[in-house]
Length: 201
Image (cartoon, rainbow, N blue to C red):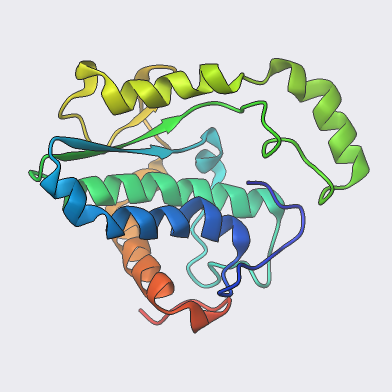
């Protein structure tokens, strides 16, 4: 999700962070018991190369004072990789694997700037980038591979692109950051009244 202006969800969270991270965090953790009961089971998180330029703005997770479209997106994608690794750590030995995959930039309406973007950005995007984007079918292939292939059975906490494991950015390997983000995410989904402010540590 790319939003060229800052928006908030109904419960007061910056929308990019809410859709790309908090929603996934809440759904997956709510399913944790069922995942353990259904072993062997797998969780696949959609990442992005954008995580490499991301930073977790712990003092302003909802970017109330320094919102930029790619700052918000990169933060949410870094959060995806940190979540993957922390979730895998917490589920170690439980028979549940958690991995992240970068499917590439996909030619879907959500990838293309729409009415929320300035017209020049939209024109440049459509004329230069759309011809080289992946089709949804091609982008889905590495996701399906991680979800079903015996080649990755028992593999957890890793990051994949184009069918092979790659090293994520150093920021995504910071275990302290991953644990802190997990704790704050728990508080945020339990306390929607935070309304743009970080929950207490």
